[in-house]
Length: 120
Image: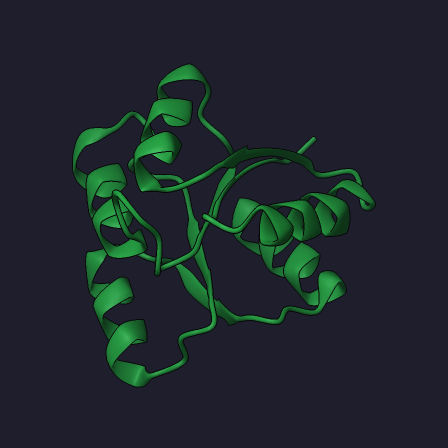
């Protein structure tokens, strides 16, 4: 079973991700922001990480950088799921180590397909 860590400060968005992926047999753990995400990574390393960009405490850019440079999950694919769609944001995330970018609102089938693709 594919395991995902979904990091987003919106409870509604976390619930939508859980529903979309859970319906197709993907196990989802959630985190409220980047700091919470880093704590969850200490407990279990997922197959894929999904992260928002705009979050309190530690935003998505800082979270991606921390995962890539200081955690046991440094090789885990990271999909950014954000309302942001500017090339500047996408390039910055990619330069920090993001694997892909999905714009909110998301299509549940496309999200599940992207997760399965990067999970290998």
